[in-house]
Length: 234
Image (cartoon, rainbow, N blue to C red):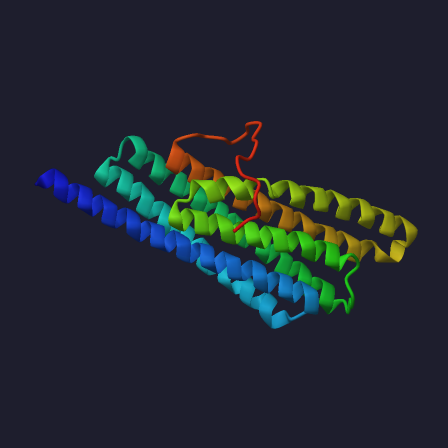
């Protein structure tokens, strides 16, 4: 009976952590959306909200890390249970870094529009990779919530789309700066935004890889990965 009670308590503790991780995921999703909206229209109120919410995300990271550490000490999980807790700690770190990248976009947006910059050069190209990154992040959190290994596999392949788009943006902006040196400051800011988006895609991919690790026990990080399913992200 003691063992059964302990197991139930462990499941309850883990589910509480899981719920807070998904809450954290929802916050960073909103941060990214608001940051991109601010970048598009120069809404300083949205940008400031993103920056303020980063404190909430940081606080959640500390609380969740502490909860996971206590869970390991108190329950001493083994095998798949320990794998789940360790992967959760990694996911928490990735989510916090998504929040950091969204905050960078928001701060850059404030700088751009305070300088009176109107139309952002190559905005549509930046927006297109942001849309892919946002969908990857949403899908990775959905795969985490449902522990859907197939969905996690499917979304990983989309990271290549973002990487390709980022390289194109970089080349185009370098050419733009060479042709008109007056655009250098704005172009560099835009490049930083594109880089932040590329990193968000990386973090979404990482979360998907941890879902695969939890469900199937296979660590596919740093491997020559070939997606099992290249259907569009759900």
